[in-house]
Image (tube, rainbow, N blue to C red; front, side, top):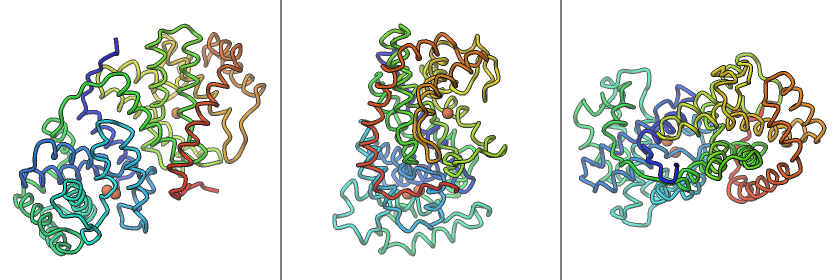
Length: 426
Ligand SMILES: [Fe+2]
Ligand SMILES: [Fe+2]
Ligand SMILES: [Fe+2]
């Protein structure tokens, strides 16, 4: 039933972009506004529809390589002394998905000032990178506490002062042409910008198959997990464990694949949780845990925007729900938790306790069995699935560990060397 899925790309990209900027008011809507500016500049310069679409999508996700809210904030405030790192990671991430790949070069160069380019401005990647460079800078120059029409002239003067140095004069002129009307500035800062981009934004409705969805799942799995070495393979482990359990349980082949996709997406909402909370080695305070509790809410609300993916949304987002209704944040009861959701909850716990963390090593088989059995006896987890896992323990563990080892290698080769700060509170 899922061989061809019609994805509402605009809706999905927007909710992802929104979620990435949600963790702090300092960066809220940053990528949406950057996309709006780039789009308006593209229209003012009469660029082709394809170019504008590529520009727009690149701008919406341009900081995708800044993996933690902390890193995003420091880039936004011009405090990061080496913004290059998030550009390199962003390019590698874009290359994982076929319909993002054409914009990978723009992501790589979106912090490259004009004086560093050796190629002419009319080369597509140069022009588009310069447009996003300008849009990103303009958005960061805005004083969020001041009415926009009280600062637009200063902002325009600031952009003009970069012309010929960090910006090619043609790109600065493109901006001047696009921003003449007050409407530009009012749209830019409007609380309704999201719906404007959703209904009028320059993207097509794309058809993707399960493979396509699966690639997006891998991309976001990496964004979530690669924030810390200790969680770098968590979602891959959950996805593998959940799909292996689904197969043993007797679900169909398509359902097994969907389970893997849902596992890759299960912690998607952690985009909105700061690293200082995610990586904290001690017990979270009440306030910190309250922030943590929103992550599966966002997993659900983002996945639910794709359309036709309700099954994946539920399987992914209900992994902290308990059969007696005591889980969070939806407090689903047993009759709302189908087999897939129950498998995911167990796969999440199993993978987490089997993993090494900074403050403890992975638990032994006996320790894991006690944790799972206690929760099954208390009617929190499904005892049929817990038993199934314990009966097939070696097979499930081997599959999970093998998958995690492969991803670990990719992480160490491509990402770990980029010196991401761990932001662990000691
Ligand atoms: Fe950036
Ligand atoms: Fe940015
Ligand atoms: Fe979670």
